[in-house]
Length: 135
Figure 1 (cartoon, rainbow, N blue to C red):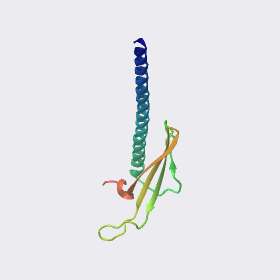
Figure 2 (figure 1 turned 90 degrees about the vertical axis):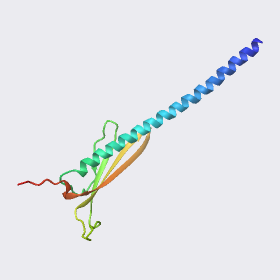
Figure 3 (figure 1 turned 180 degrees about the vertical axis):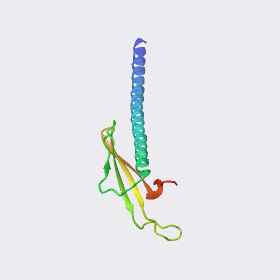
Figure 4 (figure 1 turned 60 degrees about the vertical axis):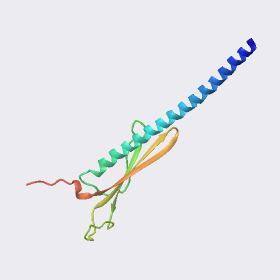
């Protein structure tokens, strides 16, 4: 009789051990996924702020070389490229729109030992944010 009780205790310990192991694996996977999501949100915010910075400058010009930011506290580096789009857009009257720029920002980062990139872009009409003297 005592042998059966001992065997039941051993099986119960094994069963709970397997359950605990599965639970720790699941929690580890959830933690990795949460970390990756946190990094994605951080990248989106970084791209958005850099894109806003360059798209709302009072004077926008085409860049010859990418504008590279220094790494932030997480090691994220951004590259900004501004390209003038010549004769690619027309208004409703068929007139070519001049001074249209494509602003593309690319973020380079490392996450869990892997390298990643994320990019975003917008169009900017150059005279949009120019200030004029009122009189």
